[in-house]
Length: 452
Ligand SMILES: [Zn+2]
Figure 1 (cartoon, rainbow, N blue to C red):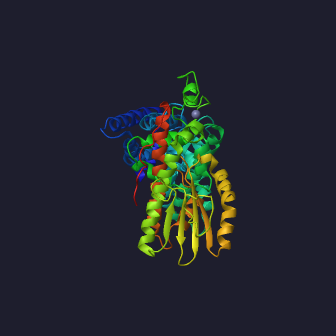
Figure 2 (cartoon, rainbow, N blue to C red; figure 1 turned 30 degrees about the horizontal axis):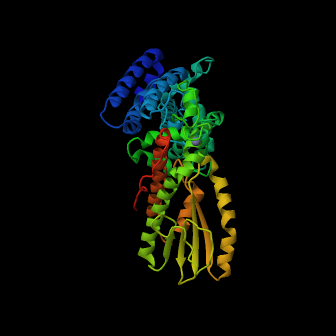
Figure 3 (cartoon, rainbow, N blue to C red; figure 1 turned 90 degrees about the vertical axis):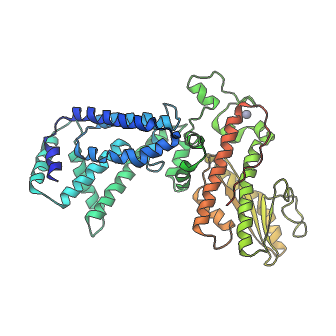
């Protein structure tokens, strides 16, 4: 690696390097852009092929922070274009390690340089070492420019300290990657906290609640849905309030009810939409999938549990049989095992992601008395409540709820498939609801029909 050391030492032409790198990068981005594939695939091509191909160039050339910013801006332009995001959208969706985790050029640069430096520290070569020492000393006097080598040195020192014994090269490399990821994630979190509009759902991914299924699924979605999912989670869709904010529309009123139209309003909050059955259609589409899946899995298992569901054409309006207990309450779904005298009462809600907890509390209170009454008849009764966010988020506690609902011994693979399909159905339905906002009337299409 003498070449590497010598190269770092002699190359003082950061500006010309930047010019060359920038042109090369622009060229590659253009070639991806011109591909005859769907835009969301271009994001994936960028992530899987283009970005890793920059690694070497970033390892051997010194760049200052302002240069890296220029490269970041260049890639951001294309990423936003492919994601159909407005110019003002936060880049957090792409670059935040807790979100899509597509490294920015500057993240990749910091990582490759620290790792190269670590490699050198473990396999020292005297000539290179001397060169590095003098470079560190020289750049240590810089006050206006960032010194890559000194930053790498500091990162490596911190990583060595943070690595539990035995301090091997491999363990330190892992620490470098992890701590850099954490550092960058926390920078994004700080930024997101300042974004009143765009930050709400991304911040859920920073909390312990959210898991990454949502993010890992979105690239396998039908056409148009990826861009919808990304913009819906950043709240950068063309809802009336956003259009007004962007100076593209004067009125921010909902065409159906004349109240203010926000993303929340369209997806969950409009009383006219509610009466028209738009939200019920989404709810029932999710419920139908749960019913189909549960029925099939139960059939494979015991074959004697009944699944009753409150859906048109099924046991609509009567999910708890009168001979078990007369009640006017109608849970969404009931699993009845007369043999073992066990009942599961299941309720589903599809609220806006920021209201997940409230809907949970409401449902538990609503059914507490019924659960007690059923138990008084000698049945063992459990209540399971599931919330699937209207933008498809299935949080960790809700994954647990699904696991509880499905028969014992359902495989991890099947459960993951279920989580993924749930977020796909919720997103697809919300996508239809969002684009129907310009039509005053609504006729519910057939329920989305996904099978396990
Ligand atoms: Zn409305």
